[in-house]
Length: 195
Image 1: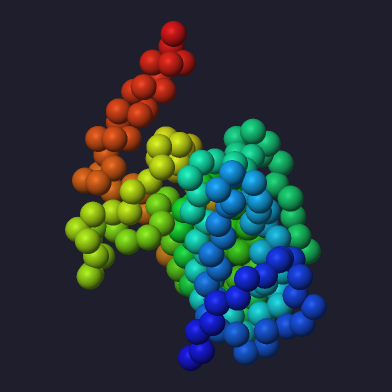
Image 2: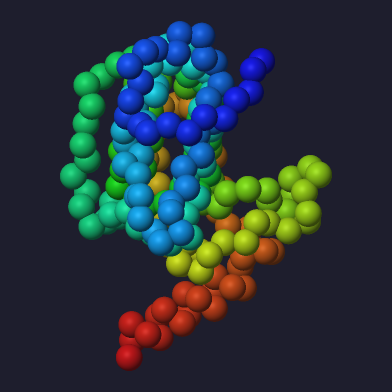
């Protein structure tokens, strides 16, 4: 097993990764929030990797910069391309970003061998992870406040597309580490809207 990190501009992929079995993609925004990435374009990596078995995608951000599925629910579609080896997909930092919902729906429709899909609303270690710090990775306030909308997007646009052969795991913010702060932030945002 070879581990390597590479910075790329996608979509690019003039060649195929014929033997690639495990792929981890980490996408980070510039500090000023620029460089919002169209996650749906990652389909090109799937198409270029016919042997891919596991995909781990980390899309953590400090604030929501993508258009939410609740702003525009018209999903884009790509031509069907069956992926016969992809068994496991985990997306960390999952949000209601429309392009992320589109990517997830594409995977559910085309990854015919998919066994498990994990959508994690936070990124990094959780307090119950083995070898962890007994505390979940902190979340930025705007992303923490986004989580109820993220969970609603999963229920509305993804759950009904999950085949019975696929185990869907949705990881919410930990109540121990994030519960009180989330409650306070939601209360503050509700008070601001109510005024």
